[in-house]
Image (cartoon, rainbow over all chains, first blue to last red; front, side, top):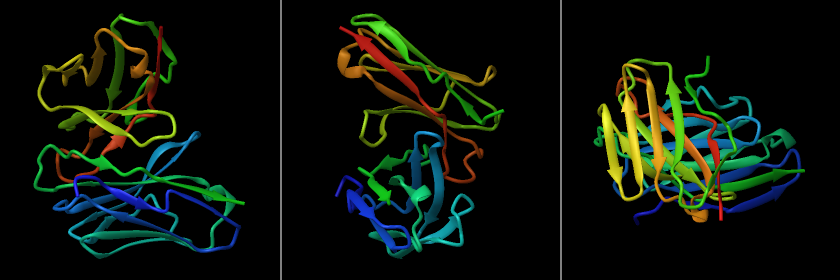
Length: 115
Length: 113
């Protein structure tokens, strides 16, 4: 598919619950990025994978967030336990490390609300 | 100093005018530069990329890069109300060693009919 897909598109949950967000990168892309966007902080990089290996997760709160790529067509971002301050839009983007231009293409995002 | 800086705006221009959006970056080894457009409630959409000094034109959009001044801009000619959005500047700040991009906070453009 020529688009990045993300599920769910919207998620409302209560504090303390586990949240799992999923991303399917563009077919053939081998780099995946997870971003979080809020009004206050803008677009923040949480994690970055290349060929399914995590290369950088320095932007991610380690105590509650985890990111994985079980296979080349699926990336997941989990929050456990979730907190109200995690409310944001989470975007997945994909690209190709073979593309020296470093272009990234974004999915539609998951809007997370933690009550 | 932020790595990528943009004026948050809003930048208001009349329909048909040229909108000029500016971005400065701090890392001299940056090699790739991008403009994304983000409509309210939507995801960022890549609209322009530029890698060499000078101008790059695509339809009504022109990206300009000046590496000596560490400055990249986006010109939108014949602005339309449908161009009203937030424009994000992004820079590959690592000399190409990684694929990561650093984003500015965006400039809100409002095109008045």
